[in-house]
Length: 392
Image (cartoon, rainbow, N blue to C red; front, side):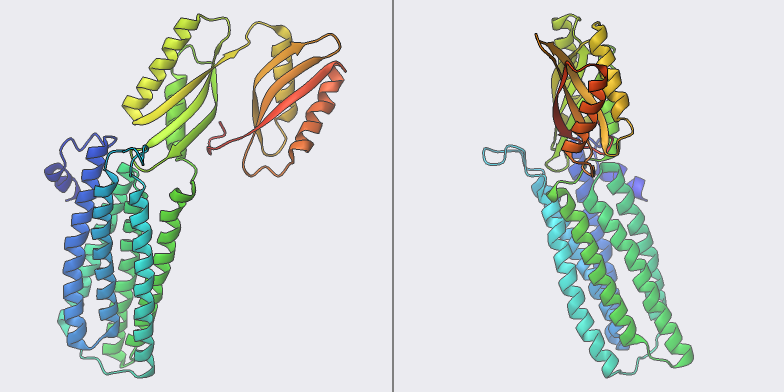
């Protein structure tokens, strides 16, 4: 069904890196959510009022919240596709995250209201009127929610949308909540034990928990979440495919929302190679990454010493010295500037954000080991933090 809907309503559906195609995926997911959740809400509210069940009414309100979420998601995808302007040169794609955050807060407020109503039902329970249509509707709702969860999670994975993946997880949680309501009704029917108010409280708490979870997932990109390791790996592999590339470092990825990714990287080339040829290669890398990954990449070309024995020896020695130091990823840009009394060994040390060693401690290790090679060597160190999870 999912593949059929995609083929019917999304033109060029295979080109998921195209911002317009991605927007259409979001629109389709939003419309599917609105239609299915509105239907489930109407059915559950109808049977909930018919049987006087606060748990079913709460579950129906939960579906209403999901429908509202889909409306806001739809609006978010539409607004996020607006082109950049003078005030927002990086585009408006982060609106998608803001709409997800708004939905999360709405869900929490709704959950609190339902918790209050359900608690009142616990204190003053009303008898339920059992009807077989209730079982049919709830079983149907569970089936719809299972399909809805798979639809949103798979679509979210395809277009790398945290909002859709979060919606899919929420649908999966709804399956558990509706199943619990169905179980409480069956228990009440065959044992006479009234669990309606208690189950309403559980569903309400479930809604609140889902809202809190969604806040974390939708706010993380706004706070500066690390880029997707798969994306980093893809950037690295595409760059290193070029025969003239000796290595890369200092990769930084700025995510301004889906389809609005900007990145910069230092690419190491042979210092003795042809400058024009190397420059052409750098231009080619930027163009390929832009066309294939839809990323605005700026490449800085770093000449690498490949013939001086002393530079190569010192590079290997310092790299070996630091390889077992916790939190140190590696070194780059090493060069030796000789003087009359001493030689400056200039290089950068890349450390992870979780590195617990101080810069002074790491510097001390290097200086101590370097002095064993000769007192004339003076370390000039710049510390870089890694901004990607692949240790580049």
